[in-house]
Image 1: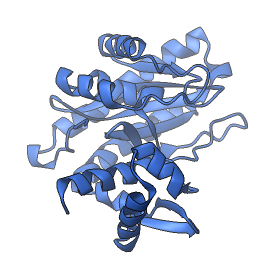
Image 2: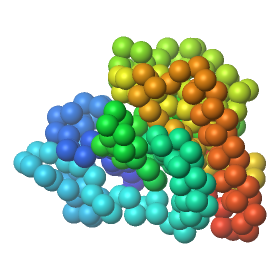
Image 3: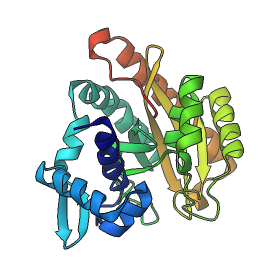
Image 4: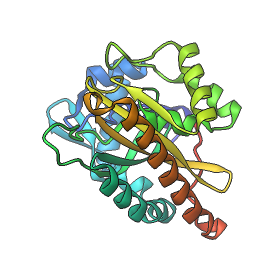
Length: 258
């Protein structure tokens, strides 16, 4: 496949991320900026290859095969290294705990331990835009400067809620703040009424993912915030140490923003 066609195919594949119910041909073609006949041809090919499926006529969504693209041995080691620390973090907080990695301009959830309290965020998506999440901000805040700049310049900063930061300068300032503090936080930017505190996970000098605790904003008071920040940072550090002790060949691949 020519590089231009590959770029278009990847663009369409990314446009289906985070939409388990599927998206229409018109929506996908519009988002990636290509004629509907071209989009239809590429979507048909992706479906034939098993990366997409059609839950209804003219609607496309990602198939389980897409998840297997990132479920390689290195990612499995990240999941395994995080498993016990995440369970311990969950036991201490009793709030929803997440593990994610960055794929282009979205965070892909690798593991979610969901809160059982009546008032909680129920995980219904497999990915979210990096700019609305503490996970994404924590990862990107530690990315090499040139990669971070490219991602900030090219990412579509969709406004998910009234609180979502879509101004690139404000977002850059938030990333600088996260890099300095060692953690990122977002309140009501991905989902109204939900806040999230996240910290990056590193394998040596490379940032390979992030963890977070998400909870109803109503439960995030000042004392609780300080406690959660401390727990999230310590847990991320523990996972990073576990990854650092692995051999270099087994490390998860560092982020490569477009």
